[in-house]
Length: 619
Image (cartoon, rainbow, N blue to C red):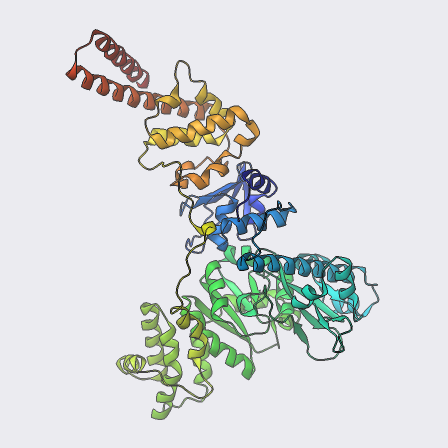
């Protein structure tokens, strides 16, 4: 779907790039902009090299050289195409979408429209639950439960925790009042039709409600915890068009920036575990919502960090979870560590008993998950031959899952030492054909990855096709690039460039791409000074090498030094003029070879004088 350029501009103006990127990495004020660690998963760094400019609405990493605006960030980080990014930003800022004639036969668009309607219904429901908890009397059972669980007002606000009232049709009636059809509410799994066909009733009743958000903050579904005795203890939304529990980790909309900052994620089982330790100060956390980790979960984690610490219960179910998680996490190229909390039934209880510092120490010293699982398997190991064979049958699928041969070799050495067998025997056993072991079907966890390889790639839609660069900056000189960077940095600099005495400096730039870009900048500057401040953001999608638009100071990460930057501009202009005059001399000299002309001789003499004059100024 195409949107008018003026609408795209309006959407961009209504959003703040620092707010968007701040969801994924912690940004700190630096000069006129912000600095933080690069949020992109393929750039592992320990120091802040990622710069964000609010005034220009652009970002640039001085380490990996990724640059862009709001739309390129949503495309590169979240996989959105351009229309999806526009629609997300429009919805986020409350900017109404323009009325566009839709093709009723476009099934993709019909499905997208239904998803939007469903998420709108979910957001209305989330607000309803939140307000219901907020308005509940202090002596009500739900408020007493919240106090018992020691949930602060700030935490409730952060996670938009709410309450589903005891009434059978409280939400159903509210959705009706908000013009949400019963069929849509039912499809979103918010209400259910009565058996007799007479109206609908709420799915969630008398429960503490945890909205489940996408990483972009959209409400996808809900989890509800019972506050009195009853079953089930937790009730999750069934899967819908927008919610697939094996593709969502609870809490990342709030915690992703802390995960990136710590370069590690702590995985817990449920909503209350996450909320509790987040409130206590461990913020780089995500929850699997009571389900086993999946290959899709591992992919989500990999986009944020390769380092994962999984917290398991000490019972048999926890052991099974550790065994299932290990090959899956290793297959994704992650470095998993495991922690079994033997002194408490869950992280929430552990923090209540021993404090957050004790849990932080345990997390920091958590062993590799491979060793945790190995320890479980070898609880009654006596070194008998049959035990060695059985243990290798258990371990072989783990090794099959490891893509990194270096890690595989180190684990093989570890295993040989623990089993007290030769390394050659372990290597030989690893290379054998995998055998299924009753109750230990590790290969099942990787079925998605194996089957996905056989699915043909779909052709890209027009909206997903990369935009063809308009301004090709490759091959430009250092002086031209620096002048462009300084010109785009501020209006004051660009004014200096345009008002160079006796020079039409833009016409003397020899590189066509830089020349065309600065001529476009001049056009915007003359027409709309306010738009000039966002020019870098507007141009960045049309440049072949966006990183060339940024210098170490171009995003406001250092203070503005007028005298220094004016001198740099003068130096750049002088070098550009020297190159221009040199090219002109060559051109006229070639003409003289064809036909001697007095006017041409005079012109070449004047050009040479100008060159000498510029050379003297350099000295």
